[in-house]
Every structure is written in structure tokens, then in C-alpha cells.
Image (cartoon, rainbow, N blue to C red; front, side, top):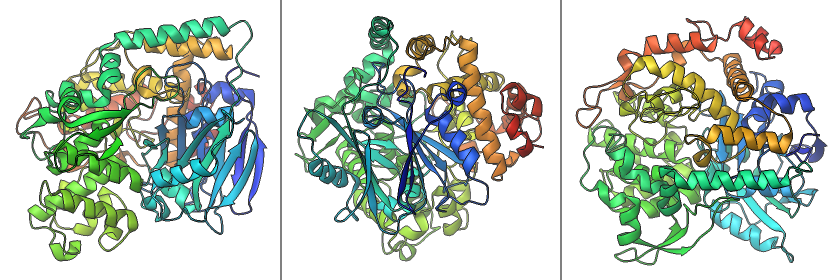
Length: 623
């Protein structure tokens, strides 16, 4: 057995209530590792195109990887893989915290969920013992309250570690962009995994364990040394220093604002009165104070402490420190200039259990359309959502999560909300593919991010944005506004990103300059695989191609590799003024397809590509 794996997982059939232990052959582990890789392998093998996202036969796979639960930095993560309600394509979302590591400490590498319970339940895993328990008293509770109640109920008498993953009201009500929350503020958000979990009437998963991850004899000292080096090098990097001190909020001004990358009022402008107030350093100085720290597993950065608003009308409000995207989402993107209000809205959205990306661009679309007279307050249940209206945003979020009134029409994501509004709304909506909201940036000035989400086969960024970054390990320089550099950048970073998403470790410390070698060295020390860089990247390439084939089976067409008209409009001010990827996208896509070994016109992987990647069984889907 390879090191780094417990060697077994769980298959839970919620319809019958049966729970079985399962294993993957070593060949499968060598080909797909874990996380997103194992998730798409299960999804491809077990979910035909006839099965819809909310069909009981859809699968929801929560998978760790060989690095999860080890001393590797940020290794408390897991991947949630399923068929997305938003598109009918695959989605893969990662969440950090402790849930992934505690799942392994409890005796399992993965959980495959299928079927649907006849009544709401939660899954309880305790040192290898597994049970389905009625979710009495939990339904209707927000995600944080659900976690609190379950932690109190199952609080260990010894020093066993305990972690909870749960859904909020949005997941129960099948809001298409509901997320899975764990460890009070970490989310598997993209693609609607929480809605799929809700469709199975599974309110939460509780894991308890005090085991450990098997490490090969004679390698413990080397593994500890590698972990120490990884942490040291990460904390020397500009990103590591920023995350350790201010979290991702420290990147609100630098680099995103100064590069035109912060969305303002549904990406209609790059002008905002007080962006500096949202910068991490000023937030800590003027707005908040730290109440307590709660680092993720094996991470030196406490980038999401529990904080308290220090003064003003919201003095004393306590919540988790928002991420950059939360601040952008509930600040500039909806026209709110008070950072304290963005903290409160972040907490509300998290408790309701919704993906911040989809939620903010739904709300900002409604606000813009109201401003422009495309929708009246009558259709919005009397709400008049003007830019910056804190109370209106709160009310819209609650209505969406509970599918109350207008919320029923906004609960299916940006694309369908625009269709419901009608008129010119589709030209104002912010989305990629045929239904995924992008990350909370103004991607008109971030061509690398825009393209990696446009081409993505899993709902989030499939590769790494290289607009402003170089990667000497991959031989890449910044793409800036150079369309000829984007295809090769996406090819190489897509393979790298999906390799990393299958290890499974946090994205932040595993994608900075120089970290690929550390990823591979750590994997080899733990598993004994002895992979070269090319072999590691081939695993990522295999995962990208199987995701692509699964989506083709489910109706993906070349025209789906696209972005909305709003994302094609050039900014009228800021660093991206007058620039748009729209004029280049056809050629960029064709070059990308060719470099990937796909048909240049259809974007379908060629049979010889699939054979080279040991995916012969998938050739039938592209012929």
C-alpha cells in the first residue's frame, strides 16, 4: 500500500441506509491520487448523462489526498466533486480547515454519497464506526448553528479531534449555488455541492478521530524536514508574509485594486470612493480587533481569525475575518463603502450557506437592473435595491436562501436570474460557461483569470492566473494583455493546478513560485511514488481530460467555452481601459485546443491524447 493513504473509504447509500467500506486499486491511486482526481474518476464511472444533479443517483464525493492530514502545509483540505446544478457539468470545490485531516484520522480517505434519505439525517463517523442519525432539531438552522449544536452533542471526553461539515438553509432548499461549510467558515463553494447534499437530505457530516496518516518507515525525518522547509520558504514569499499578517484581505489593494481587478457595481466601473478602507492593514487598525485565532491544519497562517468590530453602530459584532472575495463581493460589487457592513453580510451569507461568487453577482445584477428600470420593486417583493443599500442586500440574501418570493427566481444563479428579469439583463449578467459565476474580480483586466474560468471543466479556476506572475518551474512569464501567451500558460498551469487539487493541500501555499518541486518532493517522500515533474503534471493532464470528457458526455459544446457579454466589454477607466479579451478569444481557444491535443474546432480530446493518458475507456465519448 502506498504511504499517505488510510487505504479505505466509505460508500453511503442514503436511500437504503447501507454503509460500506470501499478501496481503490493502487493503479487508480497512481493515476488520480485523490481529491478532484478520484472524484472525477468516480463521477465518470458512475453517473451517466441521464442522471440529473438532484437525481438520487448523482454522486457527491468528498475526497482527501495523499498529503491530507500529514505535516504538509495547509493539509486539512478535501475536494467535493459532483454534477453541478448550475450547468449539468462536473464541479469540483475544495475546502480547507480540518475536516479533510480529521476524516483521515477517523479512518477513511473518502466518502461517496448516493441516493436520498426518506427523512433528514446526518452522517456520524467516529474512529471507524459509522451511523446515520436523524437530523431532528437541525433543519432550518444556519450552517454555523448546525455545527455548534453537533459539536456540543458529540463533544469528545478525550482529546479526539472533531470536525463538522454542514449545509445551511440554502442547501436544504436546493438553492443551486449552495455550498458545504466546515470548521466555522471554510467552504466547498463552487458548483452547488451544498444543494446536491441537500437533495440527498443530508444535513451534516460529523467526523471524529485521533488516528494518524501512515508514513513510510525511514522517511519520517525527511518528511518533517520537508514540511519545515515548505513553511519557511512560503513565509519568506510576499504572498506568505501577507497571508500570515492580514489574510487574503491584504490583497484587496495590492495587487487587485491597483491593477483594475476589483469588481465595482456589477463590473460597470473601476471607480470607488474609498477602496483603501478595505485593505487588510487598515481594517485591522481602524475597524476590527482579533478575538481568537484558529489556523487550519498544519498551517502557520491565521488568515481567518475570529474578529470583533471595534466601534460605530456595529460595535461588538463578532464574526470570522472575511476573505478578499467576501470583501469585494459585499463591498464594491454592491456599492457598499462601509467595511463593517461587508463583514456582517459575509457572516450572513456564510450562515445561509451560499457560494459568495454566485450570490454577489446575482444580487449586483438585480441592483443594476433595478437602477436601469429593467425590473420594478413590485417584482422584487417591494425591495428597492439601490447601490449601497445594506438592508436590501440582506433581504435579498434571505429570500434567496429560503426560496421565498423573488428568491425562487434568483436561486438558480446569475444566468437564469438574467433570463427571468428579461430585456437587456443577459447583457449585464456576469458569468462564464452556461451558468457559473466567476471569482469575485473584474476579470476584464485579468485575462489569465478570465480564460482559466472560461475554459474550466470544473466550475472554478482550472489553472492559475499568470496575468502578473512568472513561474520559472513551468517556464512561464506574465501573460499581461498578451493573448499569444495565454494558451500555453493555461495548459501548464491547468495540469499543475489539478495535480495539486488531488494531493489535497491548500491552494495558497501550494501555487507560489517554487512550490511545485516541494509538492512533488513531499508526495514522493510520503507515498514512495518517485514521480518526476513531467509525471506529476501528466496526472494533472489526465484529470483535466477526464473532466472534459465527462462534460462532453453531458452536452458540452465549443460555444460553452465562453464568457458573458459584460465580461467582454472593455473597461472605460483603470489599467485595463479599452482592452478586452473578446477580440482574441477565438484564436486563443483554437491554440489552446491544439496544445491540449484536442480537436481545434470542437475542443474534443483526440483519441491519441486519451490513449497517451491511459484513458482509452473514454474514447467512445469523443468519437
